[in-house]
Image 1 (cartoon, rainbow, N blue to C red):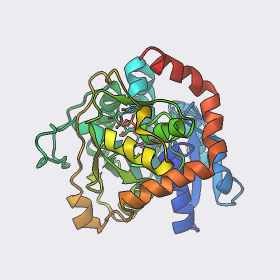
Image 2: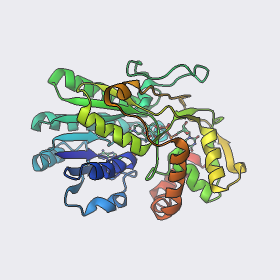
Image 3: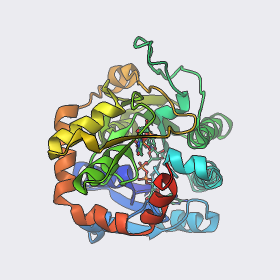
Length: 339
Ligand code: NAD
Ligand code: TDX
């Protein structure tokens, strides 16, 4: 079995490669990644020299390059993690989100049609469902919830999802889609909430909470997400969408306070800053379908996962400090300089 994993030098893709190398040592894994600002080859160092692993630096929008890779590797499956993934960046510059997230998905699926494939899996997000009100804790996103996006990022992911389902219906492409809630864990890029707050707290810098910090996200440990995708690839029904989430809703402000406490830092570092434009209030996944059909359940409780994650950032300072000192610094100034 050969699997092309796109975006495998990013947060979830890299964790997925590590999971698959361990769970299926007889598989060949080919990581296709453009290495944008969010891709980090050093993350893949532990598997780089494995005989059943290959890294190919490639843009998913590069049709010729993608076709060439398919001719060389004859993949049985493609798992598409490659995407522009940061909502704040999509508000600043939507275009690259449409290019990579929609047109790149099309190129990958065209390659699958041309060369044949057992499965094309699209890694999507709960953000395609829009948001839920804070005063309706009884409401959750199911796979039937209408698509109702808020940001250029979520719109581009929803566009890709619709295209994936259209390729299934029109061309019979054997697709599956997973829509997961917010992930956290090792190798999370330090522009996202949890790693940003850990890094800032360790540097005694202000902790910029958007708006009042009451927005709710449904957090899942990244390894649980990877296991769910593995299950969908092997046991999921073609043409189906599966929601992934662990019923772990938390307010942003409470997450930041947990991080302060774990690191022994004062809550006075918390600084409320201008809210994100169009900021979604609450995400909450109903994972009944994947539980009933595939027997998936999250294994890591948030209380344990967040401590493991904080410890990982303490033990791997070189990984995130290199990122923060580079191109990311310019971005940081632009986003937070006058906020
Ligand atoms: P990330 O930003 O950490 O990594 C994205 C990876 O894709 C990087 O390695 C980058 O170099 C690569 N990439 C970007 N554009 C590319 C292109 N044109 N060609 C090839 N490679 C390209 O993202 P992540 O947080 O790991 O998210 C992975 C996927 O999971 C995304 O599709 C995202 O929408 C989805 N998702 C993320 C979360 C989350 O909480 N992070 C939750 C649900 C779904
Ligand atoms: O500095 C910050 N301060 C802050 O209050 C940052 C970076 C974020 N926030 C808030 C915004 C959100 O309510 O924290 C929450 C989480 O923000 P992000 O980490 O940017 O994640 P989110 O916007 O929820 O999107 C994430 O989950 C769904 C991923 O980045 C997406 O790729 C995924 O689809």
